[in-house]
Image 1: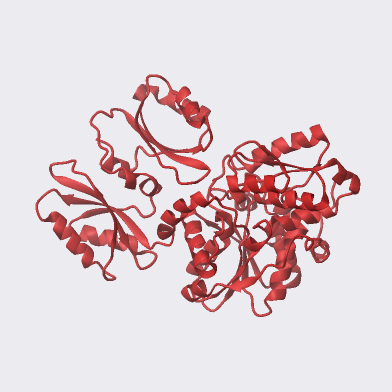
Image 2 (image 1 turned 120 degrees about the horizontal axis):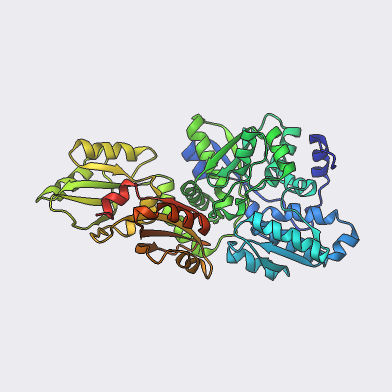
Length: 514
């Protein structure tokens, strides 16, 4: 059984880590615009500026530098969602050894090509890191390779911990908290081990996506919890099961955990761009998103926070999705479904009301409408806002003035699909059930769906919009007789794609269902 390392052991390992053969001491820069907005000093640790655009090469190289010559001679293997893969590939290239890299099929192509360019032998397998890991373990045994774990290894953890060593050396003044994104937990374990040994008064705050929060759930349960599925937007932190060692350390040393959603990550990507003119990947922006949540929750002013920008490996095409969702994530735009009488002058009255809403004039960012009823019209409206929390007040104002309104600002169905397809009522869609699916963006995904359907179930609605991600968000209406309820549920379970049934969603009933 491996001896449990204590904080003093990790401190020594971090101080003597071999990382600077490949890594540089990244800059710690003030985010001036964000600091002014939040009334706190925000510092950005620029790990996005490393040679592989991520911190991961630190831990990978440190681990490989501690391997015996005979282990290196056999070659190394790793499983990775992308950034650790590049770190291992670069380290192997520098050391002149073979590197086999197992990556999920959902990995952005940018990361796959980067690994190949560094000489890594890429094997694509599974939809998540955990799937890739299981396959890598099999290949390790078959080919007698040496496994380089992306997070659950003391040498990897120590390599990542050098980031905290640099932060405390670079910033000599007061520091209230360091915010760290969590996937498997290697980065936060190294950061927390160093900070709590040297400056225990500094808070260490872990950040996870709401749909990939394995560490938070594990700490709450006091045991490692395996998630059935993980979100794919922040692919760098999409881990179903955290490491044994990283769980042990995080449970002991991390002060607080915060979760952020996709919209918050998109807004943070924009915030970072405004201050640095650099574009980080979703995982790289999670720490900044969490700082904004932390400040809003605790109402702090005058404190100093550091955010580790842990990666910048994102497909360019994904920026379309980020740009679309950033405004909503920052709540600079609010979306509404408004019901107005289908009579002369009502539209004009509604537009006049928009100009007199509390808080001053607002721009209309979106307006979708199609006549569908003799008495009322349902209108999809987007409006600019001046800050968070306004959408509810605007909806209430509409209602007070006789225009029944539904606030859609936080409704995923509305933001992803309905805004593009208003006006789809159909008297023919009997027994329709509406579902949102996440399909992997790879050949055969749709055919798998179609081939497992019963021939008697008719597709009455299908909406898909490619947004540059490695998965597709699909909205499907299917006519399923009530008597087929159990068979339909069995079909969904067998299919295995993440889904949300939206048949009862009020947005669907307003705009699509007859």
